[in-house]
Image 1 (cartoon, rainbow, N blue to C red):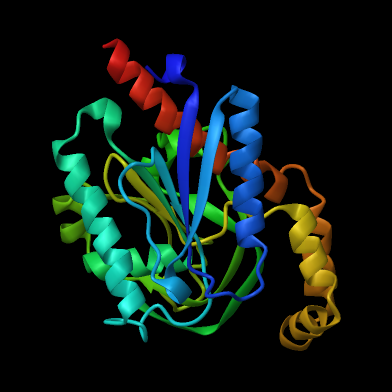
Image 2 (cartoon, rainbow, N blue to C red; image 1 turned 45 degrees about the horizontal axis):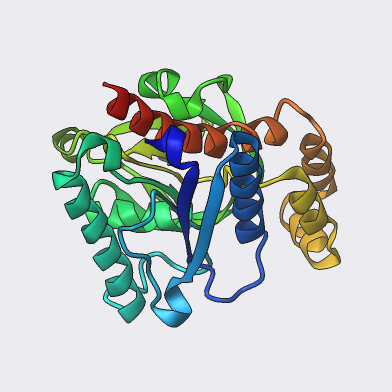
Length: 281
């Protein structure tokens, strides 16, 4: 029983390829804070997928797959992708035969989300016309309003977005066939003649992902924006008013802070509750 063993094993697949990032720090902090709050003995392990072809086995209880740099298209067929999708196939196979209490939950973030969408062929993964970087509203679709991982979020809610690529033009027939549902999309702008990006999908009962960064914290993002090179990039591309607005929004407890304290903690709670309820049933 989860309630008896009090140990939780969590694997984080690191797709950052050794590049400096805030994502891995934020994931680690969220997981450790959650485990401490719940009184779990945490076994936490990171796997450097892209540099070391390192992937976890199926002995972990929960998996989180990170964001990462570069194109989600140009690495198709690479050795690290083969290792990554081999891991994914192993988890899928495990979940097909495991008891409900033992099934593995996986959360895919940004780059991982794009890779998985490409792998399943459920949307057009392509380069954006310009980089999305900053704090943006995300709008829920009907399935998002009843998604337990989104429980407590408002519509729209706010996220940190940092990407040059996007998932658009979802294949609804494929999504339906695999039991998937779109939870949220980019800000709806009818006056702009571009397809809205898909921002969150529940792929199945145990796999869920977002194209934004739910792990992003206000402190790390503020440090990032205060770096002279990043400040200059934002101002050059979007103007000083945009940079100032982003800095101010990071201090708003109803925006990034709220998302940070909601999505991944909800995912972790749900992963444990499903197992406990199944065992009790």
